[in-house]
Length: 258
Image 1 (cartoon, rainbow, N blue to C red):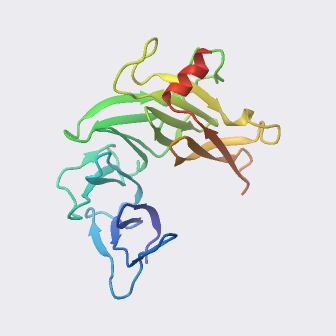
Image 2: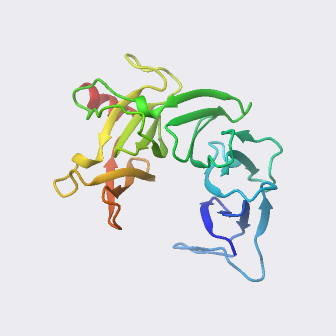
Image 3: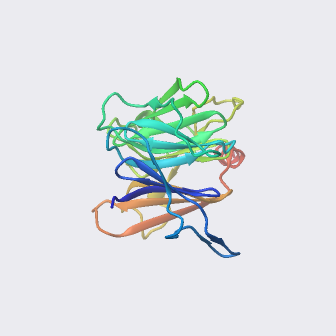
């Protein structure tokens, strides 16, 4: 038995494991409130992504829903959602095996990903599998007076990324979330890959001020609601959740320039 590292539900349930295996569960019963996948009569289909025991830490569905993109060790693997087969082509995101892909986000035909402990976000083409852009998240800053602007420092690493409409949210180890424009058309006054705003979780309330550590999770609960999961500076078991609502690309621009 191996630990579960990631999962994704489409019509089937894709479960990524520590040993580099993806188990695909077929739904056995569906109701208005729940879906059951586990059945002794219908064991899951197991796909082995490679010859090395690399963990499947994260996964994401392509925009056209044709494939599941999986962070397998230092590589991006692709599973066809129709036939549930591993594609022959893959993307090597890092030259060393110990740099594990920690997060994936998809926007149109692009894949954004980062490796554990890194301050760089890489953008790849789903079609050609080529590297298109790299953003150094440790150097991100915004000049807007209405946005909270932290000092840039090379020690700032990435803890989570999330696509929200036309933006990429980047959670850093200093507790800040950068909202980056990744729309198809360059916005006036900025540009593709430039930050639109900085959301500082430590300033949200008097109870959490000064206590928020790294951002290690970003989750989209609805089209206009994002939850950030942070750790405390003192590394205790205390969990801090910060909720942001109505922060699509247009909302960010209006806030930043108002």
